Image 1 (cartoon, rainbow, N blue to C red):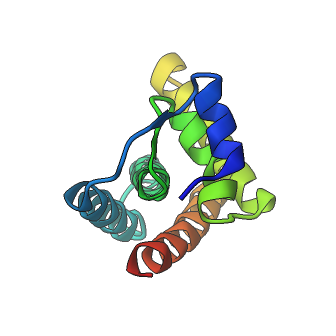
Image 2 (image 1 turned 135 degrees about the vertical axis):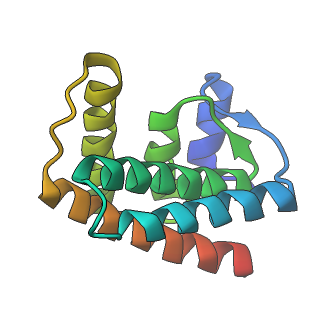
Length: 139
């Protein structure tokens, strides 16, 4: 199932085509859903909840990309492709963009101040991604 925008990314070397494996898809979705559930646990620190929600969103976004038959080595690009893989609206994609930038600050510069509003928004968007990915893989 070809997607012109994703095929353009293949042509310029940003994505690779590769048929998805059922076990891989199931594992990514299972990992994403579990992490998302843990991210909603209020007794965890905001930093832990952010990390869990971010990685849940990434696993689910990667599942959507793999379902479509593409692979990327770039976390950021996996999120960018959500508008083409599951038709995620730009307003929701921007939350993932903001989370990705915050994740990089924490990972590479030690900036671990996490805003509760960002965590809540990230969890909401990850839930929407999960819903759309579940619908996609069950169709």
